[in-house]
Length: 181
Image 1 (cartoon, rainbow, N blue to C red):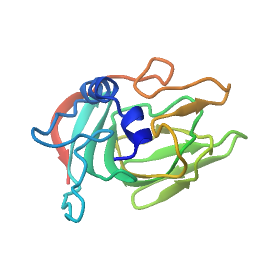
Image 2 (image 1 turned 60 degrees about the horizontal axis):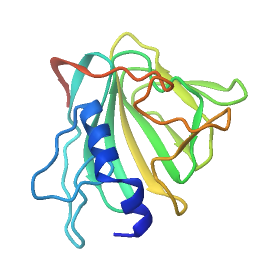
Image 3 (image 1 turned 60 degrees about the vertical axis):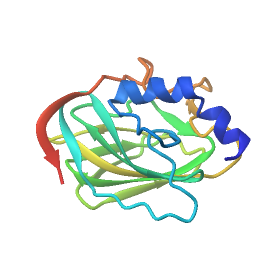
Image 4 (image 1 turned 120 degrees about the vertical axis):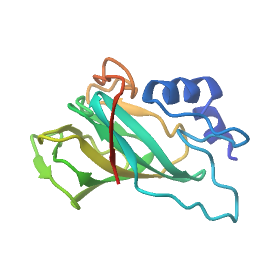
């Protein structure tokens, strides 16, 4: 594993984030940002399934390597409401269920519904919110675009904007009995 990946996914920071989002450790596996790292030369199979929420937001890791990761993100309400950019990560969202309104730094707005998506190259400022009547379920795929901390997020004000914080309007997940699948 490259040194910069080990640094930005310190055991303490990664554990804290997984606990906030309700993600469980996988015994016997090296954990990545949120899920276990796939073994070299081993395929990782997954299913698009996530528990829905009554409140807050959650992350369901699907698969991760050192340079590519995919998760399902669920938002009962709100979203990532602070304008920010991921400085070393290209990523994309595909709406699986619900409706999301995505915003750019210059007042751009696009409402996305089921099977519509958005690509965000590293350094692109955006924010979004769940704008429909049901939970917003997103497929999120990210990849390393540059060396450095893959968790680094920069606010439009030039200050660090960490996920899972009050600045990013984080609300812990309150799970319902229903699932997206």
